[in-house]
Length: 177
Image (spheres, rainbow, N blue to C red):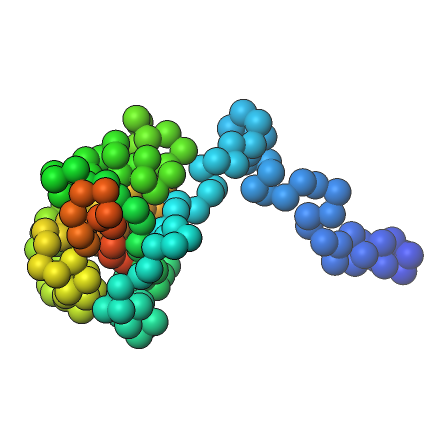
């Protein structure tokens, strides 16, 4: 039969913080992946100093638009300098470099038509705000894979032409398990 002292020791052990004496799970995962690849955790660039976010995008993003997934993340405004050199929207590698992806040449990016991306019209207010910000220019959706279950959807267009142009829109994180 166990003594009161043994029982008290058992309760103390059972009530200990399970992380006591161990490194946090994120550090364990980083160590296992070969030395803490913090670049993959970095947020992509959505805005630049001196680049104004068009009013329709401010309105839709502050108005509570969010992307429905396992995470239900809000849309964030996008406004970046983009010398479109007469060609309009960037290709996948140019887009990856523009948002400061950690590996632009090997980034997993897929370009989608807004109609294919939003078949049910759930994000029509976001697409309409982007189209208004670009004054009717072509709108595209860039799906940027972050890891196995997380991707970001960037609904963007161009505003202006040439060296003075901007890439504007909205983006949201999706967690799709």
